Image (cartoon, rainbow, N blue to C red):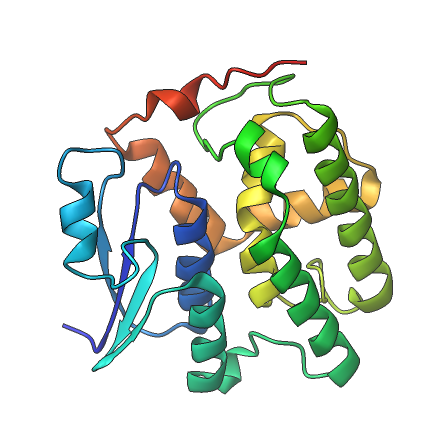
Amino acid sequence: MTSITIVVGNKNYSSWSLRGWLALDATGAAYDEVVIPLSQPDTVARIAAHSPSGRVPLLRDGDLVVWDSLAIAEHLAESFPDAQLWPADRAARASARAVSAEMHAGFPALRASMPMNIRARLPGYGRTPASLRDIERMRALWSDCRARFGQGGPYLFGRFTAADAMYAPVVFRFRTYDVALDSVQRAYVEAMLAHPGMQKWARAAEAEPWRIEDDEYPDVRA
């Protein structure tokens, strides 16, 4: 048993869990994993046994408990500096933190209309005026990061960082709902889908037996 444990929800649906887990996996550290299926009769009780917030993900590092995905990324960046979860350059690092915080706090229409469902293919679903505005902002943000800081690798800031972990669920969403992208944005999505951690998570999602019906067939179509 390792000193680090991460508690996550269903890998097919739990976007916040993916963010924390992907940052942890990118460190190369050994860890244990607890998966708690969401939307089950015992879900609330099982999560409460681990998490003071009643939500996942949660990281336990020895006696320390961290229960927020962005805080998990910050803790891991401090604990495993060689993983370089934030860019080394000061300006790039500030921008990476800003876009991560924007993802953490924003894009409510995209979240509501296009829930993460890795197994599904739902082209045309989820388009509302508000979700389209979120999509447009996301596309502009990715293009700006790639143009200003993307030298040296295929990710938002060149090499893989916590910012990529924060946007990882959107990458899966854009594939599920077949969102139109330009060549720069498409290349980023393809690089993310090829990332070993993303592939590992997706394989586990495909193998899960659980279904959340509300996230299988969203109500809103174009």
